[in-house]
Amino acid sequence: MLPAFVDHHVHLHLIDSTGLPRRGIAAVVDLGGDPVALARRVDGLPRVSYAGAFVTVPGGYPLGRSWAPESIVRVVTTSSRHPGVSGGARTAVDAQSDAGASVVKVALNADAGPVPDDDTLAAIVDAARERGLHVVAHAQGEGQVERAIETGVSALAHTPFDAPLPRRLLARAVAAGQAWISTIDIHRGTAREIAIANVRAFAARGGRVLYGTDLGNGELPLGVNRRELRALHEAGVRGDALVAALADPWPSTTPIHGVSTFIPGPAPTDPDGIPTWLSRGTVVPTEELTRVD
Ligand SMILES: [Zn+2]
Image (cartoon, rainbow, N blue to C red; front, top):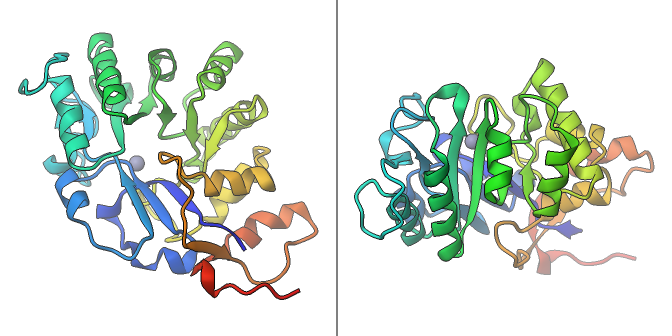
């Protein structure tokens, strides 16, 4: 028996989530969806946290993508910190918070279009903090990871995969308590190698790593993703640290009660077998588990 596992990066509107508990996932964090649909959602998952819509600027990511209908994108046109301003940064955050979001997802993808300027980004981060929300950034392209770290963004939606991070930035991210959501398995080739090197360096310095797959983005297994676990293991996030990345209740601070992960059979003696073993987990009500000594 292990604590309940969380996929910290999914898009529920792109997947059928009903089978997730059978395949080991008890809770998810939706990082980009329709806030109204998410607020009304009915499904069998013990816990769903969400960001609501992507907060972006005119022409910015992910506007125009086939998987991103207008309802999942919130366009900010002014850095206004006043409530109720049309297109204002504060208004965008308030709308997600009012729909029950516990995080705000900001698009800092400079490879895909314009990104919020410094004023707007700071206004988003401050408004989120006032509402008690975390800010998670999709940081991609020249200088964007650095901006996310310097501005006090609390989590990165993806392990940085553009370039190896300088030690100074890694140290700042760790010192700030920033969390990185792994999503290594969406990459192949060089981007994958860079992501593994970055998460290795981050974890080795004590950085908080969260298991996450970006489920809904391309062909990924519905449930605990063995390849993601193997990539984390390769990056040195092993054993107890790997379980911690899976069981971290972020963005909540409250552990998930009532359900646990059950894995049949003893843990393998070979550490290299642990990712595969963990991927065989299934979600069960804790009260149904009886210890057999
Ligand atoms: Zn995503």
